[in-house]
Image (cartoon, rainbow, N blue to C red; front, side):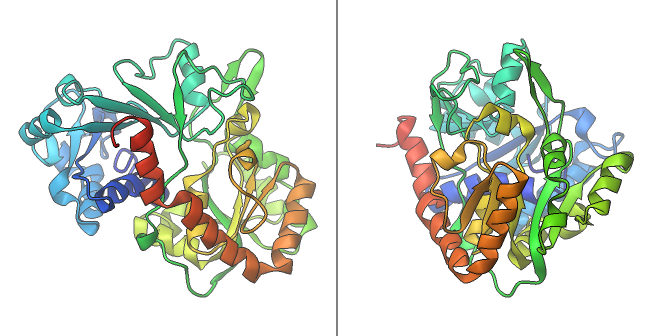
Length: 374
């Protein structure tokens, strides 16, 4: 999403990497974001005068996409940007639909496109919700792509839902993410939501959120001299967790201030010494091999990443620029290793981004595996 919940710079970049990446490969790109009436801010505003539309316009104009993008009021033909009539013409002539989590469901814009790829950016949860009889809108797609490297593999217990999942890494458009300049935040940072949505219980196993994972590392600042800085979206009513974070030495920033637009998000990542990344507990429990698009931004910026292992270490090289951990003790050891040879890890971070996450490689491979590109 870009505008459903406006002013989340990281979520915006997760979509932009695909739009700019495909455009950089020479493809014509049209972006459609459906938004439900209940998501409009303020609720009484019409679509074209909502904060959602204001943010959508500003982002599309910033990246030269304003003539190829539409914010669509779901269930209607009302748009901001490209008209609905032109969207129908585009769909009729389109070759490939990349449908993030099945959000586009309008038959007139969906059915005419011959290759319809369901892009799963939230592995474990999408599959488990489906098994709980929640419609995740898998139907009608011709191919299924996931950023969970292990989904559908024998080593992963998460159900494949009878689908053949194509794994993909998170892409990054390196031209928009150069090696960053001097460090301004002398510490390891990240941008996160304490709770994104509901957890799920399946087969007697609990698949939780970022809150459940981070609590396991709450004492980490006490055993390292490294500053740990969270740009954390957390409800002020979470008083017990807020107190525990502050009492244990975590530094908290407002993500709306430091990462509320694509430009501010990129600047915050680049100003950081590196990332300390904790995954949603469900990704860790599910061993799905998820790796964060946010972490890829740090790597491309030449900022090393310490990331909680979701099983990704079986698929992505670790050791130079990227260090994985599963326990608080391992995290502390990796922080020490990072400090010991920071320059080498910085070079390794950028090299890893260039080798494994370059959008030109990742997106070409995706289209080839879906049979949309020879």
